[in-house]
Image 1 (tube, rainbow, N blue to C red):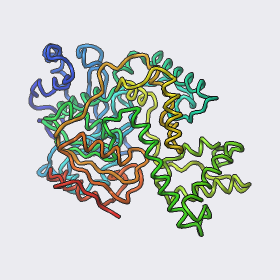
Image 2: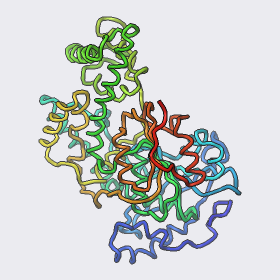
Image 3: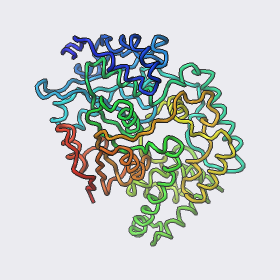
Image 4: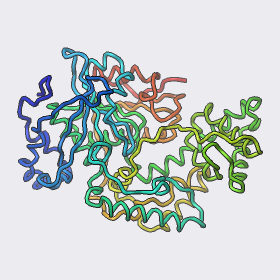
Amino acid sequence: MVGRDGRTISVLTVGAVTAALAALTPATAFAARDPLQRYAQQELRWERCDAGRPAAFECAKVRVPLDYRDPTGRTIDIAVSRVKAGSAKQRHGALLINPGGPGGPGLTMPVEMEPLLPAEVRERFDLIGFDPRGVGQSSPVGCDLTDDERSFQHPYSAGTFAQDVNRARTVADKCWAKAGDVLPHITTRNTARDMDVVRAALGERRISYFGHSYGTYLGAVYTQMFPQRSDRFVLDSAVDPALVWRGMLREGAAGAEPAFARWTEWAAARHATYGLGATAAEVRTTYWDLVAHADRTPVPTEDGTLDGDAIRSGYAAFVHVEAVTPWIVALKTAAEGGPAAPAVPEVVPPDNTVSAVWAVWCGDTRDWPRDPEQYRRDAIRDRARYPLAGDLGANILPCAFWKSAPTEPATVVNNDVNALIVQNRWDPRTTLAMGQGMRRALHGARMVTVAGGEGHGVVVAGPSCADGSVTRYLTTGRLPAKDLTCGG
């Protein structure tokens, strides 16, 4: 247990932490039990995080092995934070929070999530934030990448593919030269192991969890590796574990097509207001004519000019029909000689540390082709099937040239742990199909779909019809009797 001052006041069982070596051989795990005991029994020194933050917002460091196969070797620090439960009498336990990414820092999540959670949840849980390994204040990694090298998706064309290949190879080379000793250990499985060390250091027998976007995959991996340590898990806007990671990028591009079709119908019904076309077909033609025009003569915007590929790269915005339509109108007006259009609307604020993204994406799975021609073929095929964004999701990435093979295979998530998945119907990043894939992997879970929900995030976006199910689950542990759809 942990006293109110944060000090560990009883010795944890060694097995609580050695479970962190779940994927290693029994002999290796047995031999490592004594070296791992020190991580379970470390004393956390809680201090006020920031003079500009509430005094109740406290931070500490948790020491973990860089390489769990060598727990007596090099160590790194994981930055953790907390806001204690509002009621000592009602307290249920610790709720770890991850904002997504990968590469998203989570140290400030307790104060950011606090106003989004009802009082009865706040009374029961210590809110625990943490920067995942390699991110923020947790031994951050970097590759010294240029602005161009930091971008994730590039359109395919025969004329630029050699440049795309060279960029991907350069990123992989830079990352290996700058942080090759660390990056192979920045993986989802190791972050899940870190979470279990945090659990042990907090003195908790089990942990509850809230994860958004990539954080849903991290949470699912934890449930697979440590099912007996998993309590109440809420997964907001879920990744399909079967698609990690290249498959997720390609599925996201495929999911853009129905959102685009929905937008053309919406805009056509409001032709009198926006003038983009009286039918869905006419709106579609207007859009693709704009893209073709921009390829010939880039369209001026407040942040510079956009060619057709740059306009297509804003495909995630089409789930927000009311927000994206004025932007398309402004681009069309600018293309016709009017004033410069606004910048691409920010659907999801950027929250990724790019180097950590590549480490996780390339290090989690061996499912990355090494032959550049495979990416060329996939980009051509996906562009034909999904014209809006197919090539953006399939084109070559640095993982094709990553210098170290993953130390472990990707986690197969297939368990009966209880969890609650909440999902917007119109999510541009983790599509409804991805959320349904997570539901298939977690047999003990329930899923609440917000039928009219737009955007990437349910709980994190504010009030929704899923809130009641989330609150009931976190406060009582009871899941809905069946999967639900709410909202109009």
